[in-house]
Image (cartoon, rainbow, N blue to C red; front, side, top):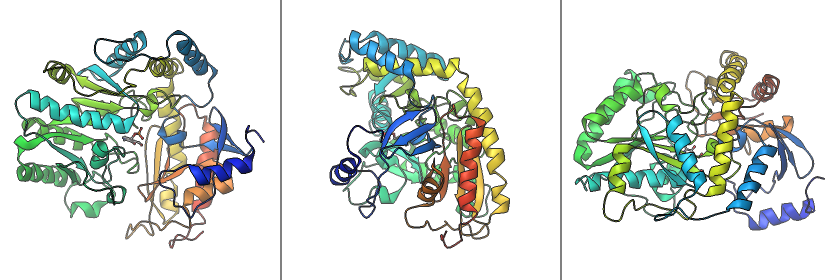
Length: 450
Ligand code: PLP
């Protein structure tokens, strides 16, 4: 036993005390992690797992790196915290802002720090609306989003999130948010026989006309939908969407909480899909999960406008620019660069995809395999003709894979089995992960039975 507390106590106490996101109360099993090293995790029973989800899409540099602990301890000894409100600042936040401005696409120049992705999307929506307000267009409040988008679960970004079940029973969400069709070519029935991009651009133009272009602040979108199932849009989607937005003075917010910092093989994915966003939201891979931190990156046009009005930028959190978090992010980015993890993500991601792709022709329940860098999704369907979502067995296929093989994968969106391993994963480990998935999928029936 590797945990310090008795295992029975941990299990009982977890069930009694901890509210877990998206866990039905009927499930009283727990996997209580107590240690991590590289791509491996150990639970409180001493069982070892291969982490093929990188936690939640974020453990770019792998678990348990000594140098991260050293950086955190050194920064805590020097200055554990002071605020970045008003005229206060700290050297770590300043250096990280410089580093991010250097890594980000050229139009991005200024940085606001948050503690995660949900907070970042809230801040981005506020920033977009406030930008128009200070520019004398206070009616520009609408936000365009997409169904099956994931922008976190706070009320702002959470309203932009495109899953109805995640909003159920929580009263009114943010007003003035509307959802468009996602650019998911495999789901061809969405496009009623038209070219997907033609359909989506027409829908966008129609929606803008209905709401009134002068009432719209911004469109928010993930360059590649992560939770939606690594949905890589058609190559002309973002360039054409952006053209329409520009014509109407609507800002573009890229939610790069999943895609940035190497997940897709680049520092940022938006340039790779033809987006030139005014605002980029990041979190997750910024620290590889060693500490909570997010960053909202904006162009000078936006930053100068929102800081130049009245008493200044009206968004701020106690932990904005936390010096320990920023020191850890700086070290994390240094490791990603020094260890060549962007190239590794492309290389290992391609390798994983080559192993996984044949399952689409071998198994009727695998409709499509998609990937970008170290993000891989199996679209699970009852059969490749109707493309209906495969019913999940009690729990989910991911639970079965974990129990039987010790490989951690996830079901998302809810028809996709997704892998998003640490970027340091070896080819041997990647092969183990894909083989584990394949072994269970080969047994799965179209009624969801195993
Ligand atoms: N945006 C995207 C694209 C995400 O995938 C997530 C989380 O998975 C979020 C935002 C929310 O980030 P957080 O959970 O850090 O609030």
